[in-house]
Length: 112
Image (tube, rainbow, N blue to C red; front, side, top):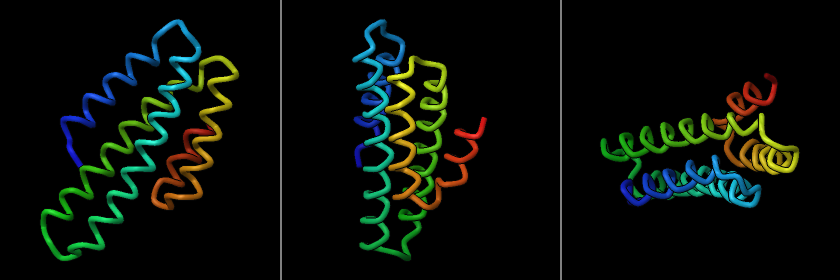
């Protein structure tokens, strides 16, 4: 888990969210969804390796914080074209069923 690389990817995807091309925005939405899911896998791997270490707790917190930050970016996509929203809702379903800790946030975002 390389934080500076992840920050760069997030920056590129955020910029893509504001491009005129629909395809760029679709790629950004799916990229953000994939990052959230990959971070959850990373968190699971970290817990499996060393469950009692202080640095593991710190890394888990950082991963959760990043997931919430990305969900905030995705929330803004709910005002986009129907094709973008459809991809977003599909991604939210994937997150909902794979990451129990984010279910409440997903429901809150979709309910608004």
